[in-house]
Image (tube, rainbow, N blue to C red; front, side, top):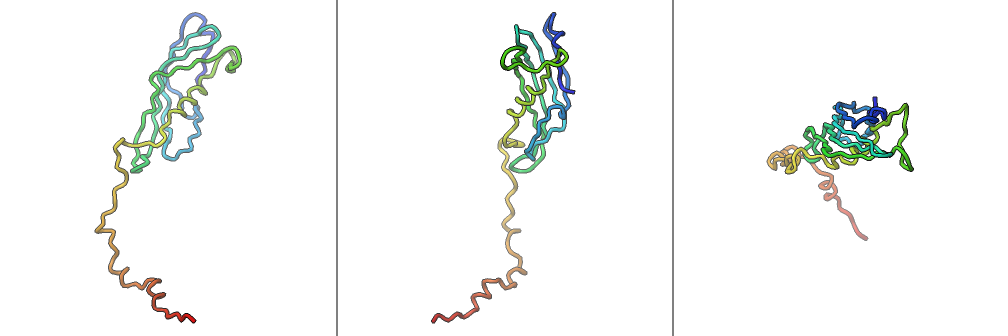
Length: 162
């Protein structure tokens, strides 16, 4: 169920659209394991017909389920395009396909969302990352000291040079 815009509705006046688009319809094909899309895209748009073009303006919001690249903590990131604008050509070289008097706006959403995805999602800008191990706990145990190492065995060898 893509976001189809019927051009006949624009013959009299501008059109206002608001609602949600299932994330499966966006076909984002995210290959980043730190970002997942689980919730729908919310949109609020105003569409105007300007000669042989459509001017689409409004707001897009897509909640993302992310993992911080520093500390691996899960968090939600709101991808927001508060002043999203798109000019859709109805004639000329860049004409969009028109099917049954309707234009699909979904590819335009997809393109701008992919450009706005966070490159390295952080739970907080000042995230310090994973906790450093405690040096007291990192000391070798007494068992590892009594085990002979491979180097100790090699040091026992007596090699003659002739």
